[in-house]
Amino acid sequence: MKVRQRGSGWSIKLVFNLYRLFGYKFIYYLMYPVSYFYYLKAKNVRNALVIYYKHIGKEFTPSVHHEHLRHFAICMCDRFVSVVSPEEYTFIADDIKKIENELKKGGLLLCSHFGGWASIANCLDNWDIQVNIIMQEVLIQSIKSIEETLETKKQPKIKIIDIAKEDIGVSIEIARALSNDEIVAMMADRGVSEKSKKGIEFFGDTGYFNKNPFEIAYKTQKPLNAIFINYVKPQTYMIDHIKIDINYNEKKDIEVERCMKIYAKRFETNIKKYPQDWFNFYNFWEK
Image 1 (cartoon, rainbow, N blue to C red):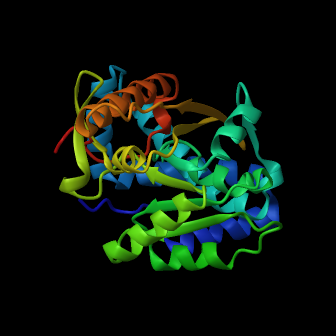
Image 2 (tube, helix red, strand yellow):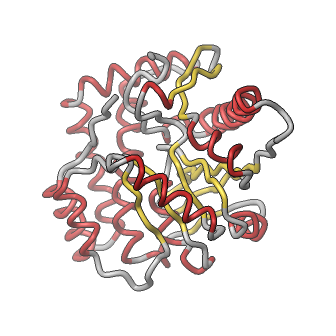
């Protein structure tokens, strides 16, 4: 399954230049008309959101529709602004130090297309943690070129490993990172192939998650953590973290499914609190 990447190079470059000229508050309010444009144009996104809100049991109205798109637009802006101005962002958690200590052990980190997942990676370089993000980099080339040329005040320890490349090369990169006790972050809420998907109960129906990070954690016996970055207010995000303990004495398929169920339940909790933060704009419950 290929999911279309939202946004265009020229529009993001324009917004970023406006940020440099007028500041963050200007582009924050600019996202109201921008998201309204997509509200009118992106019919396939609306259809996906209708299915999504029906599953989570919340009313889907025009205002909810627009607000969901606005959250996406803001988080997309934060992805780029946080590269050059990480000090402008605040990340809140019950115990930041505990999360830092867990991640310093390395292992697998379960991420999702939820809230400010891309922004936090740009803001935590002071944790001295090497993060390898495994993802299908389907960003439009013009957007990638913008991100790669931004001048950063600090050099975050982030590496993108594109799974669109050859399988052997990706496997070697993952093995190298794990052997060095680095973080390997993978998107657990989107399987990029039928082979990687596994159906798990999610809001009373079968949702299809990415089983690969769970299987890798089991086989390598590395720590398995999950993180959700919830949008709270402008340039402020709440971190929800959970460590999933793996029973290596149990058979792989049974234990992988159990861990995936734990993750899915925690994901449900975050969606109930922040329903407009999930940016998987397709029918998640359709295999």
